[in-house]
Each structure stands twice: as structure tokens, then as C-alpha cells.
Image (cartoon, rainbow over all chains, first blue to last red; front, side):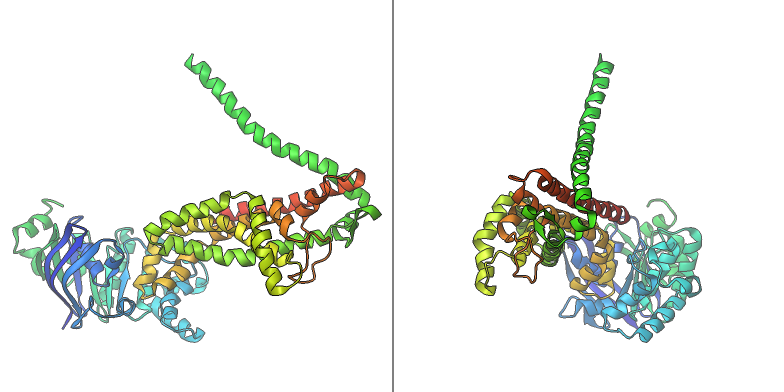
Length: 249
Length: 282
């Protein structure tokens, strides 16, 4: 089933056209990877999916993005959209508060205040990202004391705590060491059982390893979108082939 | 030749740096040399905790003034901090650019107004307002607190604003991405991240309030008594000094200098806590 349907999407920063006529269907409970060189529009496209691009001054879009058939640029509650569509950022960004409060931030935002309920959510979320054993004795300590990889898993747990349907990941491992990266990758693969995951990555091997579908972007165009296996073994477009074989980028 | 002038400049810089340090040291030496003997003569507990300040009867108890200074400062914090903080939040996160171009210089101007002008404003505007609504002379603890609350606004606003602006944008975005409203993101994610810096601004404001003299003298009533309520007249440490220094002599004069010693210790404590906080904030 299609989770997202993107129709004739164009995005402008002022006069600059950053995305050109994007048409894309993203399937539920799969990992979809966006790849392409810097400035190709892949992160921009990701941000349109939970409307984080609203924060960018002078940014406007044409076309439609539908989540479960509903236009997310129509009359919807943006905060509710962002509850349904969680996001993990490039640089781990835990809040400067305790580990517990970091995870509880989202649920509290959405009206859960019972201490026992919050404890349950915190434990479950941290277990889901396989970090519970590492942090269970220091839940009241600052999250900023964790390592980069732990912080990023904490951020994923924080996103899971509000029970989203989709998780957007914006180069989630680019600031991490190889071991942390592989942990996050394993985690992502586990998470797709329950969530639709869309991931921007600079790292083609990463896309090849974990994603089901891959979209290749170049200068604001979506050049090719296909099963990951196909895209990497028999790219249809010459530009895709040049990119994945390392001729540019 | 060039080397020569360079070493001359070095000496010039060194002298410039020394002048300010020497000034601080001289002030300390002067204050303590003239003040401490007076405290000894009066008796430290009679001086600090004595309830009556009656120089003609040789009674030099500054406890009412210590309490006066603390009350007036606390009052100004209660009034100035919420307003200043919310103003800083508005300026840093909500203010349209056009309005900011007016608001920012206005706040800076507020900082530059001489305190005697604030005093006149207090006398002509706040005193009649308090008098009209609460009775009495209008020159009281409340009036002084309101006026000082306004006077510390620029300090609190500018320090808080720069600290709020210094919070990395990804805290704000992280909060929004969890479905939080803009208000919640600003107050629950951005502000806590700036709290150390904001606290430093508040302490700076306290320092300003406790040291303020001219404006306070004009609106606080100046009775050397323990304040009994917010409409009671009050005298601060600074007011005590400025009111009587002109004609005091002998032990009376030294008692006033000793009052300045107490004030100086207050400021020292405030500055030290400011530095400590600043270090923790960075």
C-alpha cells in the first residue's frame, strides 16, 4: 500500500527551483532511500514530507503530497502531521535535559502526564532502539553525556515515543563512527516491520544494504526510482549508472 | 624602529590594563580602611542587625536599609524578570523583522537613559499612580520596585535575547518534528537550553537594581524604618549613603562608608555568582 503519493511536486526557494516535477509513491513498511550528490534536492524533498520546510523563509511548493490519500498541504493540523511523521536529524540533537525527559518530551507534548505511563513509554522506546541496557541506570542524567551513536539512537527512541507511522531520517549516520553506523542500520531494518522509513543518505553502500527502494536525484530532478537491487545492478538511466559507479558525486 | 614602537605600545597597553585594576584595588582599600574601623567601633552585630538608624543618638543600625535594599531588589526582579524574559522571547523568536528594527534600538535606548530621568518619570508618573490606587504618599516600596523593574529591563532583555539566539536551531526543529507547537518548542526546548545564560542576565539585573541610587532616592520615601508592607516607605543602602553624606562627619560619616562596604560585599557576591553561572553556561 502507498503511504505517500507525491504528484507533480515542484519546490522553490525564492526564484530558485530546487525540485522539479517529482512524482513518487512510497510504500508502507518499506525503507525508501534518497540518494544523490550534495544539493540535488534529496534533503529538501524529505523535509516537505513533514513540512519542516515551512520553517524556511521564501520556500513554496506546487503540486501535491498525500499521506494516506490526504493532502498534507491542505487544511490539516501540521503538529498532528509531525506527530504521525517523525524525524531523525543528521546531527544527533537530544535536548539538553535528562534521558528520561528527552523521551518523555513527545508524549508530554501530546498530553500524557501520568508518571507510570511515561515510564512505560520511555522503557519501551529505549528497548526498541536497543539502548535500554546501556542507559537504564542513568535515566536522570543529561542526554548530552551519551556518545554520538547513543545520542542518535536516543533521538530515534524519542521519535518512536510519539508512536509515529512514518520516520524520516536525514543522513542519520553521517556524523557517526562505523560501529555506531552499523547499529543504526540494523535498527532501521528492524523498525521497518512497524514503520515506513524514508532515509536520505550520502552513502550509497548504506542505501544498497538496507533499503527496499531507492530514488536517485540530480539537480532537483528525480532521475530514477526503482527497487534498490535493480537500481544498483541495472540502472536504467545513464546518469544513475555514472553516479553509482563513482564517475561523479 | 618598528620594534621600538611595538614595545612602547606594549607598555601603553599594560598601563591601560593596570589603571582599571589599580582603580578597583584603591576603591577596596579606601572602603575597607575607612569602613571597617567604624563597624568595629559600632559593633558588628549592632551595625548589621541594629534596628535603629539615629545618628544624633549615636545609633547606627543599618538592618532596615539592608532589608530595604533586598525588598526593593526582589520587587524589581518580580516585576522586571517576567516582562523582560517574555520580551526577549518575543524579540528572538516571534518579532517580525520590521518591528525588530524599532524594538531593538528602543531597548538599547532604555539602557542609556540617565537614572535621574528615570527618577523624574517615577516621581511624576508612578508615584501618583500608586498614590491614587493604594493611598498613602505613593513614595514606597512598590513604587521603587516598579521603577527599578523598568530600569533592569534592558539588561535582562539583551542578555536573555542573545542567549536565546545562541541556542542551536536543531533543538527547536527537534521539538517541532515531534509535533510540538511553536510555543511549546520555544518554551520547553529552547528556553531550558538558554536557562543558565538567562539566569546570568537576571543576576546582572539584580546587581544593577541593588546599586541604583538616584532614581530610588526620588521615589522610595527614604524612611529609615523596617518596611511593613508594599506601600510602606523604605530606605535602601544606597539611599542611606547619598542622603546623609553631604553633612555627616565623624563616626556618622564612617558609618556611611561602612554602609558602602556592605553594599560592596553584596555586589561582590552577585558578581561572583554571575561569573560562576557564566562559566557553567559556557
